[in-house]
Image (cartoon, rainbow, N blue to C red; front, side, top):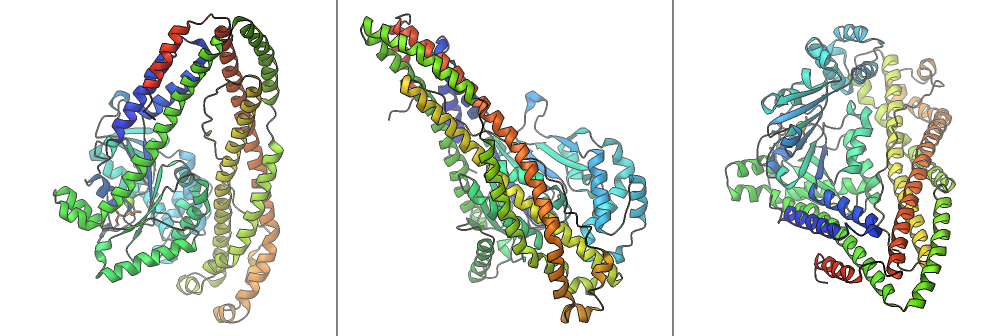
Length: 635
Ligand SMILES: Nc1nc2c(ncn2[C@@H]2O[C@H](COP(=O)(O)OP(=O)(O)OP(=O)(O)O)[C@@H](O)[C@H]2O)c(=O)[nH]1
Ligand SMILES: [Mg+2]
């Protein structure tokens, strides 16, 4: 992937920032600005772009990652393959991770046991300890597992198979070579114990600072760990969603798209790319167009407007790159994607970073210029200005100290409650749809177990789906809440700056960088003891009566009414949790910012006073100023 020298630009800008910071080293009054320059320089120099791949089982995420890299690095197969998150990282020899090594983070024992008990529960088995669980797994019969339970069954079998060899490593961090990587990434009896693998590997992508994150297919097993996927959605620089040519969208796909639709507008830039993989299967251009149109309308249905869609063949892209055959690569369709993608990541994102750095240099230059100007007034005027400045400094500093613990948590709380009101509303809109997925005639036809058991398990499924749906909704609102906190922080800072400037017009703080906030963990499931097996069974006489007669629609109506209280309790509990977690964060953000403003104010007032008292070396300051300007591009 030709990146158009973005690394060079980042390095060059970082160097300019460092040199500019060097100019400020001996001017005590601009140390805040100097620190901001150095922090930005560091970030630019070590710049990383994180690209996260999502999509259903076997959509071709790993194949697509290999195609981007131009090498078969990740294991690929027609069966569910990628079980843990695999990151392909730029090697870091200084930290002990040269090319070809991998860091494997194993699941903690608690997490693995929780996963096992959960999967057993989905299959209708109860266990408390891991020994009981292993025994229960031994008793499972493949032909008694309903279709939707298959991934859980496969996972449990893999745990049973790998337990004696792998359980000692739980909770550890292992160091392996790239030869062993395939096993940990794809051999299920190993990979089911793994949480994350970081493979340090030199390739054209990592050489550009790209971290490629390959995720397991979205499905009911991984659905429990929504927080992990959400962190990547939230923090990745780009999100790539992969679908397999003309595969129907599964329930898990739709849930994921729904989540992308919910959060899309919370990001400043559109960072989502949609890949229609295996386009080589198209028998004609018209057919391909039809498939792309179908994907587009599905995205639209899930609230994703104006998507960037790329039909391509990972298969031919990899072949073309490996054989050095540009024609095959071109025909695979990957080139169009790469061009747009490079423009976005390396172009747009680099531009933003470079501009922010240059704005800091300009700020520093402007500050020096104002001091130079103040020093130009006559002696009497300077004495008067200095007197005024001292009193202004006292009032401004006192105000900042007061404001430091005046975060408006009430306003934030109001916003959270409002957002959660809509969460409840939207979830009740979707109740009918989820109900139909859970109480689906084909499930009853295909499940070999007793109808009452199937009914109970359909309800358990529905309960899990509603919990999942609510949690996703709530997670999506956390982005809005976090944006709100950042807006409130920026407003507070801007208003301090404005007030300070009425008295000290030259005041120039560093820019407010958005704070990285912690998303609270949401692991609760909806509890609804009101719904009992006996009550459920009262709606079901036989399949015909249930599906063709009144049974199902009556159950739907009464279940919805019965769930209204539990759902309200659930969202209220979550709202309380969010309010507490975010109020704390808002308080510390405001306090931290006020502290920064205080420091900058004192530093700069001191600098100004020195200028007014003619204690600064004016000539040296002028020279510094003109040198700073040299680190800026000609405007
Ligand atoms: N015809 C064709 N087949 C492809 C293409 N890309 C992937 N496949 C096949 O699709 C299957 C799944 O590919 P993977 O890359 O393992 O899919 P994945 O999304 O990583 O799957 P999981 O890790 O199991 O979630 C494999 O059998 C691939 O050979 C393509 O461009 N064309
Ligand atoms: Mg894979």
